[in-house]
Length: 496
Picture (cartoon, helix red, strand yellow):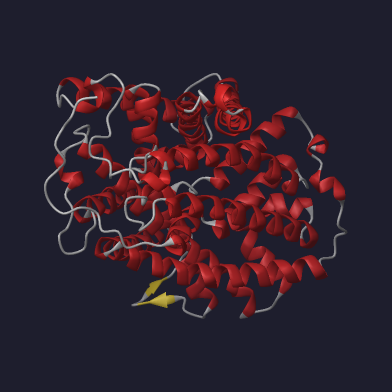
């Protein structure tokens, strides 16, 4: 390990507690958005077996969460997977983990910007506001939804700049409203739904085919994506162990909400209605259970979830780039900490600006919109890769436990390894299904080769950027051959 001096200037401010970490992670996972958009899409693949697929997908994610938690106890670092994989496996793969998470999140932010704007315009229509300054409001207008969403993105980015605790408090308020609405409508739907409850909903062997099972698992894994946001602020929590607790609490909460939502949806809606309404499933679900204005509450919750998700995307991405900049694998601009707010303020603003630019360019470059959609559709591959590499890093790092304590060895080595292999297998299956779904390349969000090209470009660009960091920037992260965390916070004896 090469010793390098710690960076000068203010450090990240330790201002967060356990509940703040839960709020950030839960907002990043965005249960309301996943239920409102993801359940209908997943039902189109697995039919009336949403509870089964959500439970099945939870198992490898639980193994991944255990790996994150154990690594965080011995080495809390804002870079998390980037640092852990770089030290335990190789700096090249560690850099790749950090890079693909950044690129995927920026594309996802650009996509969510338009989703947020659409929800707000739909809500305005429900309230009777159909024109503004002589302009007819249209939730289907890409220009209008993007413009409204960009305003929201700017607002939440500025909030994140002023302090992560301020952002966490905003997200807590949004989450409380979302969950009250979800619990109320889903609980009412379970009690009054016209369709009979069936135990076959929990039977994964009743899913129509192996192909449907694999596709459904990938979609469900994507729904859990974001719980690790709790670990990106582990240098800003007062007790590093709270980051681990927040991540696990969030994950278990998401499972409960997804099971509640899937059972309620299947009690209220038929299979055809679920699959047919897809991304508009939550709004349709609300209309089936109540009349206006109560029926609009799920749409309000969806809007709040999208707003919180925007902010929750900005915060962990800025922290990841902050950690990479400290090792000089990225430029110094990303590691500048505001002396006033104790946050990577400039990096946070730049993340918001990048997402805004990508969203705005989609208005004038039609094919860019297809590229963004393809990235969102194919992000399951890079999410699976990132999670799997982090789990393997934990297995390698704690492999001695297999000889010292076989019970701990199973938890620290065997389960993360099995989870990693499961996700790599699912990611490989998705890549193969993209490849075999067509025989030509077309810039289209439904072209398999284009969907495969998107994550391939993300991964290839990561290796190019890593080469630049190693040989041009001469980052110490690569010089030792095992990565570096020279700038990581002091390890606490109580966390080891």
